[in-house]
Amino acid sequence: MIKVSTAETLATQAVNALKWEANFSPKPGLVTKNSNGAHNDMNISLFIKSADSLYDTFLKIADVSRTEPISVDLREKIGAIGRDGEQAMLTATQGVNTHKGAIWALGILVAVISNQQTTNIKTILQKSSELASIADQYVQSHPKRTYGMQAKKKYKVLGAREEAANGFPHVASSLKLIDGEVTITQQQWLRVLCTLYASVDDTNVIHRSNLEVLRAFQSTAKQAFKAPIVKESSAFQELTQMTKTYQISPGGCADLFAATYFLHNLIIEED
Ligand SMILES: CC(C)(COP(=O)(O)OP(=O)(O)OC[C@H]1O[C@@H](n2cnc3c(N)ncnc32)[C@H](O)[C@@H]1O)[C@@H](O)C(=O)NCCC(=O)NCCS
Ligand SMILES: Nc1ncnc2c1ncn2[C@@H]1O[C@H](COP(=O)(O)OP(=O)(O)OP(=O)(O)O)[C@@H](O)[C@H]1O
Image (cartoon, rainbow, N blue to C red; front, side):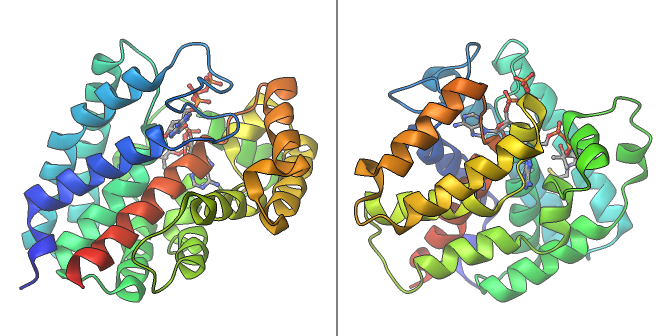
């Protein structure tokens, strides 16, 4: 049995990944330790408070997933825990949505790792797809139309639910960029971030702007990725300017950035 699979360790690592993501700087549009990005209702301390409030949620998800097979029953159980987690987050932040997408992505990953007792990335992503593809009748009966649902309907893009149901393809690509390396430099992490900015159809960006702005943002991120020193490139400055001009925040990319860090650290722990 591997050490990383205890519920306590998984919950701690999930919370740590959220704190690491929040602290990481620079991240155009997003909250960091140096900037509130395109947000006027959030800052770094709110993100840290929110991350800490989610320990119990991840612990419960890991616990329940340890003994139950991947099934409708398990999907509905972690769905209920995830929704309670959203309420715990909203209580901790006095109503600000800091981590809804992150609860979903890390919640699915924590469930699968606890369930499968593995650090094998291929297995984790395959089983995530299996678990996230199961319909949870209680989510579907939820009356409120989310921003993600509106963006998906208007532009036929894929959102947070599909990312998980497809086995987190953008996390898989991010992990390939840092494959086999123990210590990752800020420059390498910035390339991971730019890859996510360049390829994820982030429904947060669409919600604050439109598909045309998202496509322009993605193509600028692609240029920044190619620069010899990412953060000194004109494309990276342009990304920051775009987040200000259009008041956009790639929160979905932030969630997948945290998920990449979380999985990368699992592998390192096992080595
Ligand atoms: C699937 C979720 C994220 C809802 O998605 P939906 O698109 O309808 O919602 P909404 O627009 O409010 O939030 C989506 C969030 O996902 C992130 N996101 C946006 N685009 C993307 C993308 N392309 N890929 C990944 N994440 C994205 C952003 O952080 C965004 O804020 C989730 O909140 C949910 O269904 N929760 C129910 C509880 C549950 O089942 N939990 C299970 C395990 S914790
Ligand atoms: N560092 C970060 N900065 C900003 N958003 C982040 C960060 N990390 C994760 N996110 C994700 O971004 C989402 C919050 O984005 P946002 O505030 O745009 O959403 P909203 O409250 O649904 O929309 P709006 O503020 O436009 O009404 C969360 O679901 C969260 O998972």
